[in-house]
Length: 309
Image (tube, rainbow, N blue to C red; front, side, top):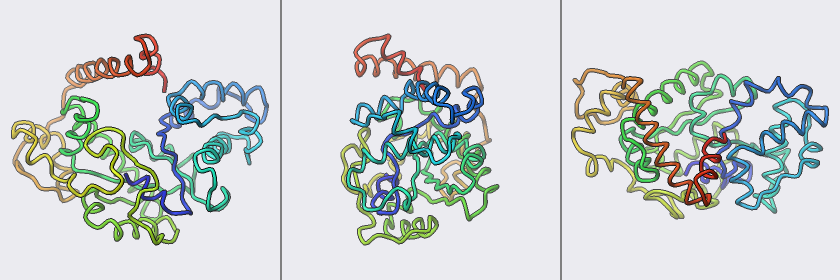
């Protein structure tokens, strides 16, 4: 949602595909050698083409030409190659851009990067980070509705990622890290967006609050062309008291930190055991595989897609 609200600005562009691959390749980039060497660049490009992000771009009609990608590199190091890749994507996602590439802020919306702020901040030392945080209980309902994910796994991963994101953001400081609550954004879209645009150093557009593209293709907000104000505190009507209590055990301190309502403030904090989390991940992976089997047209194709990163 926030991605397409920010994309309304002519000064900002964020692809509608979540990349996911940046941290893994950042940690492993030395194996590809000198990226100014065309053969080394092509080996890296081939590895990146095997990721899910490229599959999603291809499915959307975004085809990356290696020769142009190489030419667009202002520097032939990992940050330069990565920027040139997104430049290629921008050319095809935004056919008639209101601003040239050199004048815009480009970005990436991948929720899993919440746990990777220190690493990403070293790749791009001038990068700024916007963290949109949502009540853990509504996040649980959202992922359950979209993917069928196990509720307590979602709650534990929400707590782990948010803690790491807050720590990373505190280390970066307010000049590079901006945080806002989902509930505050949907309650005051234009006001909260104005603060976010100010943080990013660009003017608030006249049509702030409108989506550039429909941002959701799953869940209760699927196909929505505007901000859905009714997506708050759904947990009060749609979640059992027992599950609400278990989530507060896992994430209660963070609910307090963000000013969210608590029902069980005296519950003892509890982290889910590793074996329990592993079992939940296995069950969710099986559900994902069944979904991807239908999408990809076979079990092996679905498995290859899930193994790609």
